[in-house]
Image (cartoon, rainbow over all chains, first blue to last red; front, side, top):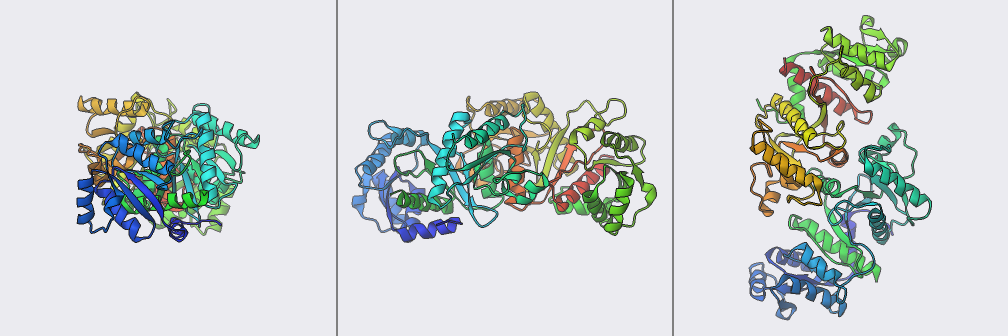
Length: 301
Length: 301
């Protein structure tokens, strides 16, 4: 079944049933989110952090919450490890980063003994409603700063795997550049050409890769036609791969601030799904992220 | 006087009176634009190209046009030189690129003997309506692929000069990065820190420069507050400087395709203003560009 909008993900996720989430370092902002997610029947929670503060915040936000589901642990690293441990013990479904440094949380997730590590690379994907009736995937907006060729292959593989959960089998993958031509003075355009050919040779599977394509050529059939680009990806891309973090971050922030698009953020490469939101995400996007990860959790079981 | 929207630029430009534009290689698309600009009382035109084809296209589009203002010249390079020459002879105000390669047109503009060359670098700026009640300037989306430190200084200087025409004296300049912190593994963040300090030392004048700032920190006061960034630029940037062409191109295309923003494109660094539109620009944005360059022409006299 093809998921066509962020709204549909939220709906499906609720239909599939509640998940149990452990938040490492739940602070005031997370309590508001917990309230919202519980009201929507999206999830139940274990809250790890300063128990006194958490109880106070729950009261202030009028959240009815079983005290037994609060774990008193103020240390960030320990709170992170605990959230991951609860998943490995099958006491919760998904660990979630609260008010702590991303690096502390990722360290707990990648811990060799008690973590959720696999042999895959971690990468991030932002999901949003495209210009036509479908969702689009933009990667990587958070983790890999300046991916080299090998890293890009892994980022693409992770995103192709993610897209499949939403019904996008054999997705069209556009490698975003400044122009659609290969140019020696643009190293990312060289890599894009190489990745396209690797896909043709079966070294990147289960998708159709094409690049370089400028954003308009990737998403607008009209723009691709004017430029005379012969490609099954051009104008119809499902997945947009950014050349680096400045491109993806700027693009995703433009979607939020100028286009007022809702987004959801997912992390791939772990044994089971994890939730990481950003401090500057608004409540709606944080909820979208929880719903999307819960949806993936159900679909990957 | 502070110009606050693209709509206002169009209005002001019409009020200031018609300019005379020479189009090098006017084809069918340009004739539609000529018709629109003439109807709006924005400009009169000299059309250079295949006279027969131009006459046919004028007829088909029902444009009343004095045949003496058509110059028969099919060669791109010669048509470009001719348009520039007419400006130098003060027979027209502004040369404009028609259906020809950018490189041919730029070569004519930069010709040492008959061009519009200065000792400044050419750079491009995209203007659009910001999220609050003002226009914003994004640079460089078209010419400088991967500007180094020296080039970025010139790009900033050009944009500060352009902003002044629209009433933005001492503009706030944000250097866009993936994050707001300096990070050795992000070379553009290092350059941003250096440029910020150069501005403090008076090596970049008539503006306030700050970076690195991620896009949200640059344009949203709320986002800057959450991140605790102390800066007079953060959340209030007038000018957004991209680290390279992939960032700026993707950003500007996102504005068009996802946020449905109108844009205008200007080129700085020449003796007098020039018009360059892209084949994939829509008619509205091409008209905005003509109006904006005409406005600058009037203001710089």
